[in-house]
Image 1 (cartoon, rainbow, N blue to C red):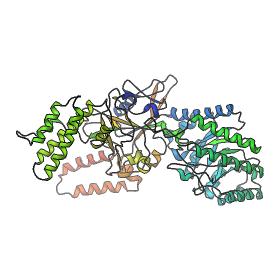
Image 2 (image 1 turned 180 degrees about the vertical axis):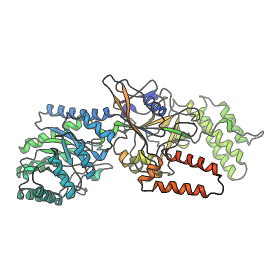
Image 3 (image 1 turned 30 degrees about the horizontal axis):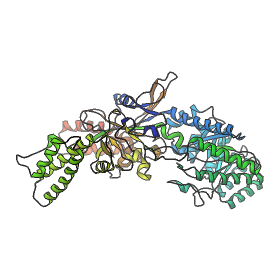
Length: 624
């Protein structure tokens, strides 16, 4: 995932690229750059002392609220700079993160702003109606049936400032019918427009004529005719477009704004006098890259806001129409960095290569003896040469084994000695990185078994190849020397973050039998939780909210423990009582289990069923 430097451990994981000042490295640990600056390792150990095992998801509500305020501040700055008369409002799209530990604090922290929620389903609309501060905007996107539109009318009756964005003419027809049936107040109406402009990147299909949502030009004209015919033109308040999540280039957005701005002006001239807003959707990109020169976006927040405000003012002035209220639905930008996944390393799979396991004979084959001599005499001066010799010897010895000239003990000694030489050479050469060294690291990467499910906690990595910043929580005053691939604990070969020469990850050599080593996965607060799947029936990690008071002191609260095994089975519709009965019956009918053992075995099974399915640390008696 990340590109790292072996020479500067403080910058090894690109935190100066993606951290945005929210997380920093001090005293060899990752710290939250807020309040009294607690370290993530401190937070993690505090949770483990309370008995929570497996992966942990830490939420930092102040980061989400901070992002919203930063967005508002930049738009207000741009409006002032360009003398823009329109307002700025925003909503958070619930599809990005619907969890209460995120949504409720966000709404509380932003109640003084024109900020609300966007819903794309009936369940999300219920959340929006429940938690959006009264009078703040609610937008409803996605396909709708009569019931969902009726819910929008109920929200309007409750006093909510709600806009139903129609995706097709049939939805407008349903709104017209509900207006006749339910009467006033009728929700505001938005029209999602199908732009010619398309996006770029993984989510490019959100825009363009072939996109899933939106009205064509012909349908826009038809919608205006229907609104006029049924005297609902005054309810049309917004047009909306969205060209894709994680827009890594600004140019498609600028083209889309020009297109949408002209459509806005034309609809105003056609009699849509109350049309006053353009919703530019989401897509404001987040910096995931851990390597300088490989940015996830080619623009800054200042450039983004300047372009939006300037272009809409330019079009409104040219067309002699009111400068529109600007709406955004930025979700990833608001939510991504508020959550950090922390997971312990359970095992290093090549750590079996140590001097203790060598089985050298009194008389070894010449090449094996040469390997041993290389290992004993390697130094900074000869490290590169000996590294080459060791790799050549390994190829020769493996060929000799295939031909039957050396035995399995000789082969085992070969593998061990070569790994020991490589490890020692890389330590000696850590200040002299090169393409050759990186290639060798790729060849002999260390496999770190990490106590989490990639499918549950990082589904976008598995499904879309989306990288996330990852780094150890401590030992950051030491240079990492091991090229690393990460394996999760599912029994699926796709559950791996492979070593990547273009974005290599280096980690520390760690003795998991005597010390703990935790990895942090950052910017996982957008989409990952709700998209996470129960592959192998691994459940959501234990989550906790870290909040700061006015004095900068933190508290850990809102702890939601990972589901236990019985709850997970119940969720997928197993009758857990029946499972218990079947186990008890099998124990009772067993001829190999004594009566006094049955209660003991049953009690042990009940203990396991009451815990979550993540592993306890393999080499520790507690925790994990």
